[in-house]
Length: 318
Image (spheres, rainbow, N blue to C red):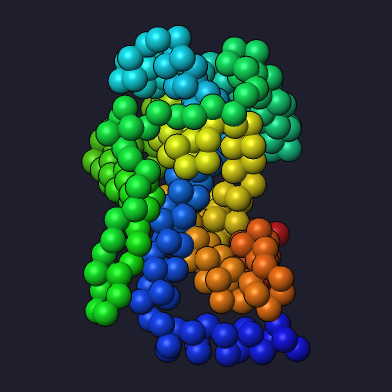
């Protein structure tokens, strides 16, 4: 009963008495949601083009952050380390597509999914062999990013904003804008959209699926770098970063597995929802709502709209 009472009255009462604090909670949720969206974007790109759910996207985020820190620890200047990391992740992504997935074309989806699970453990082991298993600090200040607090005056109070989260939001916005232009205006982007809509139709007009998949995996590797830098700066570069893939799943369910805008909107909904639930309803149940809120919300979506907010309804006629 206490939990039900908190759901019905807690936020409404608190919002009315302290709207500035509520605005700070929502803003913090939006910033966290952007971080979730960065990881979800990698899943969407690969699934949209090839129909493969790349469970290894989370460990690709980890591997990119480990590689960046590893190069820096070897004495390589930060910006050169970033360029080398970009090259490493693009080569790795292309290698995964050619060596692991291309031989499995036309195999059942479960085979491809299991291959990406095996790839997850392989990359975790490779990362540990190359760079060690200690928690590492990402020197983001060398990239001009600082983890401080900004104060925004609103009415009679002030809202505190994490400078790191704000930077992540700006970077994610620019990345999404770049991907939107890439998909809508370039020949490769148009070919990718054709492949996503109909593989057989795309092949019939001369589009080489293998080349498109290489491009998609390379872009997904680049997205993993951006997510790895942001998440590594926020929580440290450690092997638990690979589990961020699990937090991206509710985002994909909400937004739709084939929608780039859906990954963004789904991340924002999850981020804001879990922050509000934790701050306003958490005390009624002893806290920790933030750990499971996203999965409960995703379950509700699966029951009533399994294709997500922006996903296409699949109709099979028998």
